Length: 70
Image (cartoon, rainbow, N blue to C red; front, side, top):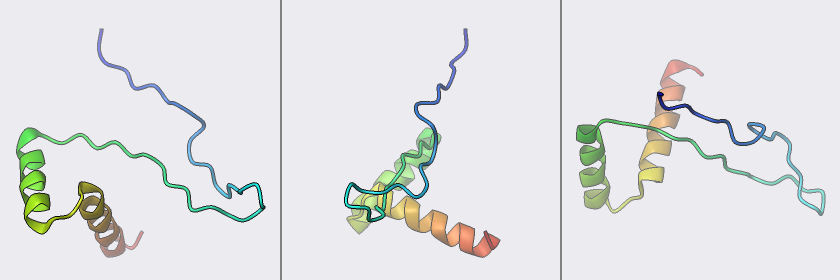
């Protein structure tokens, strides 16, 4: 049998509130699968720049979406 992705949870929770009633800035997980060569390029770059993959990928995604007008 092939691999299947199973949803865990109800998706993005919008407008989630804390117990005190204030809104919270909640992050959600995002999985990205890349080939080995791209992974190695990212690993080399992040070590050289002393940044986390999270920072690099978030910035890249923001720039892409801005250029795309999304």
